[in-house]
Amino acid sequence: MDAVWLHVYDPFGSMLLSTLVAVLPLAVLLGLLAFAGWSAARAAAAGLATAFAIAIGVVGMPADAAAAAAAYGAAFGLFPIGWIILAAMFLYALSVEAGALDVMQRSVIRLSADHRVQALLIAFCFGAFLEGAAGFGAPVAITAALLAATGFPAFEAACIALLANTAPVAFGALGTPIITLAKVTGLEEHAISALAGRQLPFFSLIVPAWMVIAMSGWRGLIGVWPVVAVCGVSFASIQFALANFVGPSLVDVVGGIASLACVATFLQFWQPATPWRHAHATVPPSSAETSASEKAPDPAGRIAWAWMPWVFLSLAVFCWGLPPVKQTLDRLAPLPEISVPRLDGRVAKVPPATLEEREIERAVYRFNYLSAAGTGIAVAAIVSVPWLGISWLRAGSLFLATLRRLFPSLATIAAMLALAFVTRYSGTDVTLGLALTTTGPAYAFFAPLLGWLGVALTGSDTSSNAMFGSLQRVTAEQLGLNPLLTCTANSTGGVMGKMIDAQSIVVSATATGVARQEGAILRRVFPHSLALAALMGVLVWLQAGPLAWMVP
Image (cartoon, rainbow, N blue to C red; front, side, top):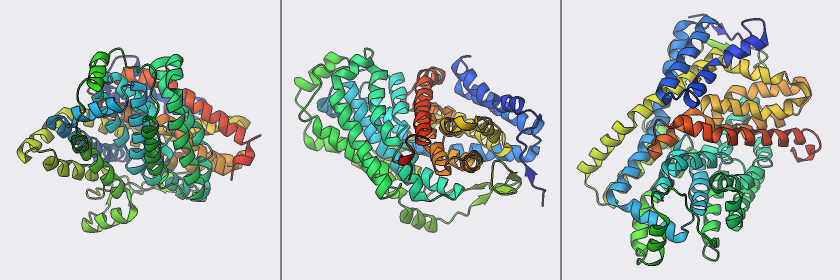
């Protein structure tokens, strides 16, 4: 058996120099994407090449292990992440083909012709439900596509979907990030959930208003503040109550449905005095107003017919997220977990990244093709084929067309995940984290930024928690801070990095048909992401001091 290679966190004997080198892959990826005008595919390839060179040439990772990490990451990018995107966009293509999307558009406009309100309903409320039920890119892909369908300019739809996919992320996929963090750190799951439920509700109140301001400015917020308040308060209240008194699993699912119902009900009694729409909306305001006020509304039965595929999707992703369903499906298709050759068990974390003398890194790929969230979405799409009256032959043609259209984006996501996995298994991600742990008494502020960095690197709050959870605990104990506070901050701060991870940006661009504008999207959302992460840092710093009574 090959000897275990131990991480080297300071290869130059200078943490400053080692950190500058460790950040190069991320700097290359984001820099080329945002400022050099490179396509996402080329930027990802350059970032991967940089990460590979550093892993082998600087920290001394065995070349075959680095290659295996890249292959593992690419496979994970294609399945389950790419599978979710493909299935969701296939369902979207079916709705377009049948004309159901036009009916949905008219029904949303009739509920409110105001783009600010539509963003709250679709991106925040429905997106929170999808995050809680499925996660892994599904909320961004689906809500971005639906926003574009209601008349949002494609670029704006992509950005708003990313902005909305923040506050619910820590409780995504039925609480998986919180559950993973508890396992990694040894802390009590309910305590982490409770503290997250005392941090994120503040941001659940802020994010709906933040979205509206990003779209239409402060003046735009004044015009819809009542519905923004209903949206934020309803979701934040549920988030606080369930996280503190029930647990992490159903926070987003229940909160998303409840806030959607509250906003829809409130709109029956209140509407903005002046409906606002983007100046470059694909459906001109005059057309929207004519459709809503002069044309006969679609019959209720036809509206139900148009929305039913998305009801199928909601039911499917919820059912597929339930542990008993997952376990049953895995038993029906017992494809064994595949130990990644040349990588599994060959790499180990060492202190201060772990409490143990050495912590062996596992690399096990699960091709759980029946229990994957994407399969649930695919089942919803298959059920929708006869429901929408589309022939199976035409549906097959649409699926192949969707696959061809998404192929470049899927390849890009594979390259980005390959970069993330090389960074993770080479230990250079820990080098970046250790740089933040040198901040001493100010570490309470920087702990959420470490989680933010982790999500920006990996595209997943769950992966960030697995990567930095132990480091957060070790650092807290060395500095005399509460480990529960810093470890939870890794997850709650991490959610703000979700909008800038390259994977999510590619998903949003693909869903809205604005491929090659990933750099512009990144430039648009990055300041929002950093500002929200800094605000979380301030809250955690206060909870380490004058607001310590908030920590369970």
